[in-house]
Amino acid sequence: MRFSVASDLNYEVKKPSVFVLNVEAAALRRQRVLTESLNLTPALAVDRYVEGESGTRLVRVSVEPGPFSVSYRGDIELNMLDSDPGAVAETPVAELPLDIVHYLNPSRYCESDLLARFANREFGGLPPGHSRVTQICNWIYENVDYVAGSSDAETSAYDTMVLRAGVCRDFAHLGIAFCRALTIPARFASCYAWQLDPPDFHAVFEAYLDGEWYLFDATRQAALQGLVRIGVGRDAADAAFATIHGEIEFKGMTISIAPTEPTIAEAPTVRAVGIN
Image (tube, rainbow, N blue to C red; front, side):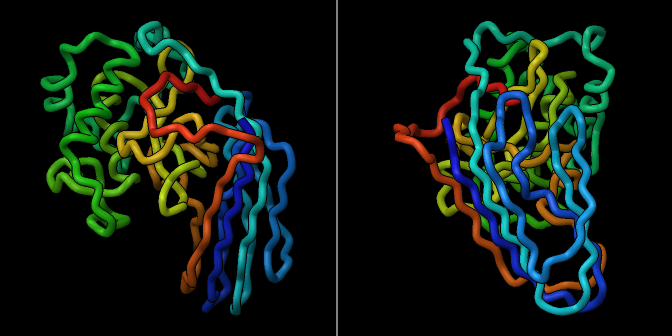
């Protein structure tokens, strides 16, 4: 499947500031960037960095006071791994690659240690594998209300568990925390999401199963086969579309994603979809 993605971000910079942008589609084995452009207004020199395993692409730019805008356009080809969920097993900790092991640890927004007792009581007795992570997503979908404005940048997985309300970011954090509590490596992923209404940057999570990273979306708001991955990290702190050091006013953004070839629209589904 091929998609055209776009994002436009607008700021008023109050004092000299440094932006670290993460809006470009990741460079992955199963996600190929066909064409793209990143335009800054005013035009400024940038520093670039690509994280090897994750394909996350960061751009750093220093901006003087005044209006500042970021415009990204990309044509992306997805060739996702579509596996039989019943055949996707969990990987024992002793067999995990060492560069994956840190995704078992608690992080700022994913307090798996605080949620371990509940996770093990609720999900510990389920058959291990892709189906267990799906059951985690089912529980979140059925027990946490999706309510815009119900959380903020400080809300963690533990907070969401207490409040039983949140947005995509919170659903992803809770799924990650539950997985880690069950010794399933999990990480946060930001995406352009086909069929998400209204269009926005979307947060999902990935679980490491049987040697692959598989996508999960407990909100059920976007089709897994239409997620164009941008960045990943331990939690949202590692995958913000813009990390800003300075004083700015955010003026707004527009996001879009559309297929560039005839595509049958599919309802959000639970599938074994691998991306890396």
